[in-house]
Length: 258
Length: 258
DNA sequence: TTTGTCCTAAATATCTTATCAAAGGGATTG
DNA sequence: CAATCCCTTTGATAAGATATTTAGGACAAA
Image (cartoon, rainbow over all chains, first blue to last red; front, side, top):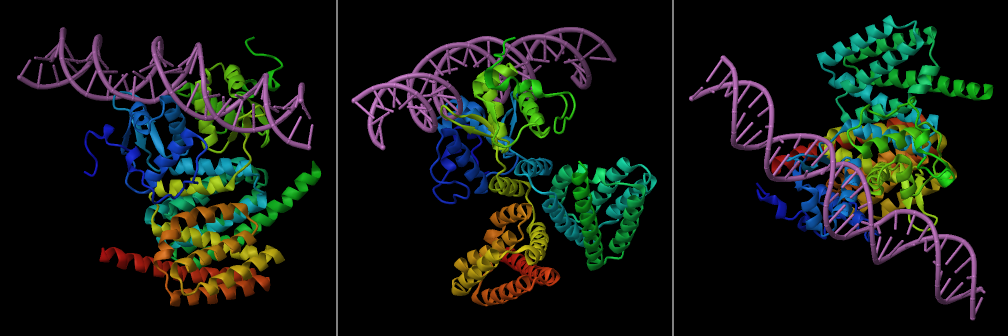
């Protein structure tokens, strides 16, 4: 309604005002960076919603007064950072992206790897995420969530003697807890951390460890069903602190052995 | 052999094996996507370290058997996701990126906005991050960190009557706490959340609110200096739960008023 | 007449080739 | 030691060929 139906000539480029420069770092060194900046600014001013069509490559290039290749450069960057989606075909063109929390998790995981985060930093962050998630799960879990938790627990119990498979099942259980919190930020962060932490957990597994884990899971489900957030928080905090100290200990031993 | 044997270290493209496909989603629809996939795979196989030079646009295009513009498309995507860095000039070319936690924070913030995360989800995540950070700060803070905390507190006290400026100072104090945790993952997530939560806090400020905030800050510094992680965690948890309930209350009133 | 399938046409991104401009670093020269 | 020139590399433009997707029409079958 705010947008002219024949939008193409309307002027995305004209929607960029001097105000509300949330991300712009002032002078841009390259043309495509400037275009990226302008489009991002428009998006964050809230005047465009996910799914809106911005136009075709060619029409956007015209609007911004750059060549098609420069426009492509800019669009590729925006696409990679998940701001837009590109479709080919007669109904194709450039669209504002739907938020994609899977992409968010992937991006976080990539950066964690590149920054070279230490194991301890990762484990501490995981503790932060899961403690909060457990508390929220105890407050917010639906009957469907609780059913999923029981199923995940049953799966883990069945695989208690298969170290690798059990690890996957245990992580799945933790994922169900986070899902039951109904907080998508926590969920995305948990997925990103899982990507990076997976190898660690697979290594440190054993039937005895698995039995302790199952006991913990059973206790946590009880807290959630009883709607006791504080108990759930304390339980998860204690458990993960224990896991952390064991992981860091194993790590030291493992590296000493190498 | 179209490939110059001595050029650029002899074959990024050849480093891609059939194994260890961490991110590849199977068949790729476009050429540039396939190139992106291959480079990412090589990077995550751990055979390349941040700062390594991959070659020039032209030489990479040769290695992968695509045109320079297609290569540019791929490189632009990788650059946007923070995997590589591009430098111009005679010693320029494509380099494996140093991890950039500022970029991480920015990407997270963009996605949060696009996904349309609710205020409650954001506040809960902030609580998770800051509670853990406060505990770690009480364990890990150096004398430099503590000095920074005192300075941030002093700054906040001076600005107690200027709502907007005080909000900035308060967020800076919280940032100092997170920095004192010496956990870069928590730090990046805190920055991302701050970007998005800033407008909320600016709105709900007043001198009375500021006085309560300063009292809290003083108490928290005491906990950190006394090396009492549990006390610090409980203090921050209680404080942020209070802030959350006030924010959500204000939000409801604000929206009802609109 | 209605329905379903196939085919064509148009719009669109993808990819190629070619060319020039700008920037950065090193070597040469005064 | 400083200024200048030169080479390499990315930044940007242009024009065109190719692949892909969808709309809509044509045609055949029920």
